[in-house]
Image 1 (cartoon, rainbow, N blue to C red):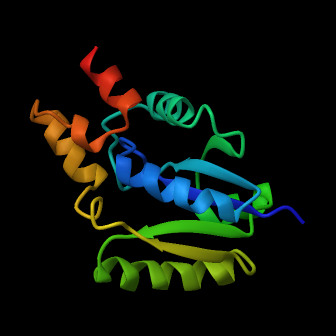
Image 2: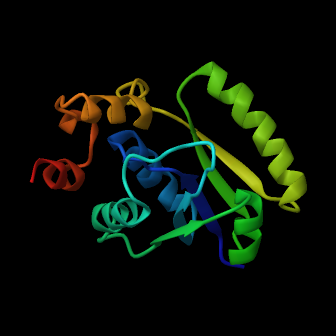
Length: 156
């Protein structure tokens, strides 16, 4: 059985913290799908098309990575595509408390879906898409927190 994992998120925008987690998780799986979930609670700064384009560009040399998007529950999406694993990053202890609960619910709703947690490296633990969006909106330089491809695109 092929080991397929989903790394879900809004990636609005993708940060170097996301990239680090994805590259660290990649050797564990045969295939990894970076999936942008539509979240009715969040208003995105960048369009779905733009975010998918950035993800494809950043991971263009990774044959085990596929970029996709979905609506609805992440656990249902995982079931639909045959993924038995979900990868989530943890920056703070409070992230663990929240993600643990979601993981337990996903295990039930997703009929055995396993969540793999990776702890953020200290160099990236302060980076979040929310803060990066605020820097971009405020016309600040967000390039230290973004993959080169995304930073270059925003500067053009």
